[in-house]
Length: 207
Ligand code: PRP
Ligand code: URA
Image: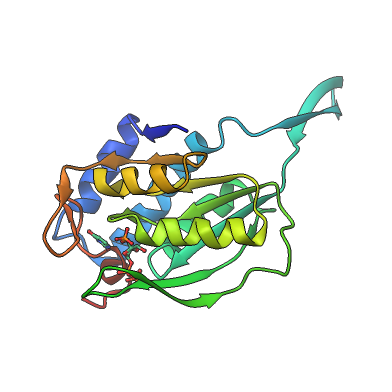
């Protein structure tokens, strides 16, 4: 399906400050939250609506409400920071956490936490992770969601490497990808260049 790289000026502005190596964790977390809100606007553009009549103080009109129930799936740890902003936009979403870390030697994702309910209760799953590097974590998460029965999945991130976009598209061509930027490449230890460094460490002050 489609890959969307945001061209919104607010996203570009905030992303530049996010990338800056002098940006401290508090500001970094605020920016992750704000960029996530803006990307949520773009990611949810095609959500289904159902007509809903509404009475205003001035009379009756036809309105519309969201038809689909949405699940937000942050990949721990770094995806946590994206939840708050998106949740503010869609407060009735359910949030399920998936814990994965990249083995630093093999770059393969290792699963350590999974809080999915027994069977899917939503029509759309949005996976949240700021970094799509090799794509291993995102592919593994979508694998887990599909095995569990998710029918429709989107990926929302902040920075992607072309390698990660290719890996996710190849493994799951039906998953739309929404990011703030697609960067140049991965370096020899699997970091995105120019990227922003380690998104988990920069949010949680653990560098
Ligand atoms: C980072 C990031 C992604 C993953 C991306 O997590 O948040 O989950 O790496 O890399 P990939 O596309 O090559 O899989 P990390 O493993 O560093 O864990 P953390 O979020 O707990 O710091
Ligand atoms: N994970 C990060 O946090 N940053 C990268 O550049 C790649 C993976």
